Length: 284
Image 1 (cartoon, rainbow, N blue to C red):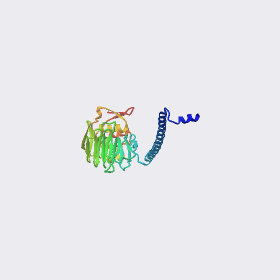
Image 2 (cartoon, helix red, strand yellow; image 1 turned 90 degrees about the vertical axis):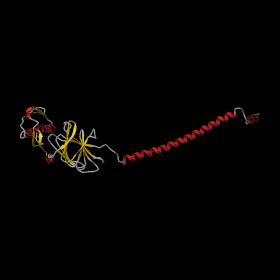
Image 3 (cartoon, helix red, strand yellow; image 1 turned 45 degrees about the horizontal axis):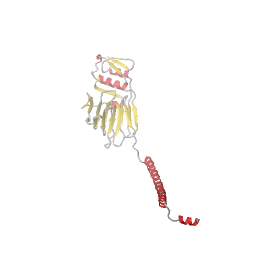
Image 4 (tube, one colour; image 1 turned 180 degrees about the horizontal axis):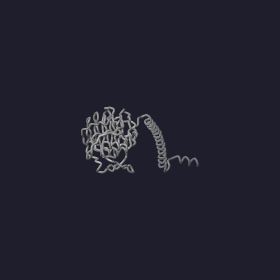
């Protein structure tokens, strides 16, 4: 009887198709999971290899390829009553007046040689046709290839001047580049009522500037006092009796103290002075 029952169950039963379909679906699901897992593992492996390659490339590029770095600057301040002479990396020579400040890059760029000046400086520029030399001041830039010129541009003063001795320079308004003036030897540009004006000028102070002796010819006494205000950090209380609009000529050594310079100026102009506290000097 048991054998008969067993044999009878080997035939097709009710629900066999449903059960077979369910088991087949389960088998396909397992196969799909294995294939998906295999593909995912391969993807992860390749992604890891690519990531390692990218990291290595970045490390090699960072180590061996040249990097464009921001330039470093050296700032030099000239003490009161002194002058400084320097030779720049391209051979250009510079003589700086008292209380001038110059900023020089550690290395000039491939396109230009530029320095920043607050004060007065005489420059003898080495020629380089591919890289112009530029002196940047607060409002104006002086662009040259190779020449000798003097720049007066203290931020504490409204006065601005550029005197050309040799070669050619272009004075450019840094805020309005279309405003520019080109100078020839024995010409100068100055600021008058906020406008650049070109005029004839013979700059004969080069040797005196280099030696530290300030020479002035047919200059207003008020202009000489302006120099002293900037160079020695003093203020003047000027009375009408001083006749500051009178033109004078003479020279003095910049390394002297302010009182000795005033006594030297008394030799070319009649005035009296009184030194008060806080570096204030009465001129009458």
